Length: 308
Image 1 (tube, rainbow, N blue to C red):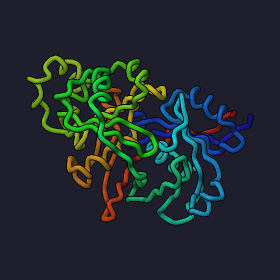
Image 2: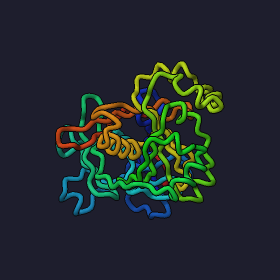
Image 3: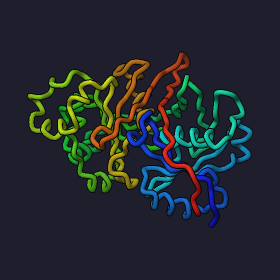
Image 4: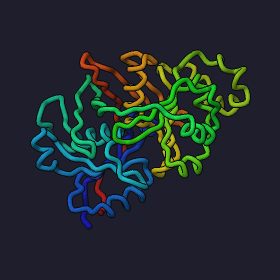
């Protein structure tokens, strides 16, 4: 064991404690898989990142650093909020990118490019594999979520490293009122992302009257005045996280899907974490080459060392 530089940051927020926290061990050299997994389970954060030197292949491809990302229960090949959070911590620790205004991160899915957009950094969404969901696959998931099929506008399998079952539902109230059976979702082995386009509250009050009493306890005034375009929730019981506060990989794959199918414009912002008392904000945009970029603010919360 040795003292290693350590930071804890809050991602997808400009106000500390309203986003998704990330633990970053800035020197993961010499740590075994088991040691990394044990520490990630101990932090009890949705993800813990370990920074390493690039592999020879990564270095040849322009990588500035390599990162391994762990949830409390498993390693991930890629995740969005650890990508932005690790970049912030790496830069704050005094490192300089090989190319000004750009970072290249090596991780389980390969090389991920980040670029500076004003005061924010954005990562290039990895290529998305998506496919339709059969009725037989979807039915038990909807049952675990407490959703009726009539409330679902569209559904897709989404895989950009992590696999998500993505659902676009009829309104924000439906999203906020969800009270999933996490044990059932874990048994199904399914991570689910649920989203709805923001509209004026009240349109679904008659249809969802029984659900609204729960949803509105989150503060309907705050939600009604929210400037974002999409409300998102992420349920990830199979990897030890009942509900993730703000999820970059999910928002990336949702954007690639929803933009391609005409459900969302080429630039929009999403809110996530409402029912957890968070106010995460993710900025999604597509450039002229059809590359989707995922941006967000990062706030430093803890800086020091960890004996690991």
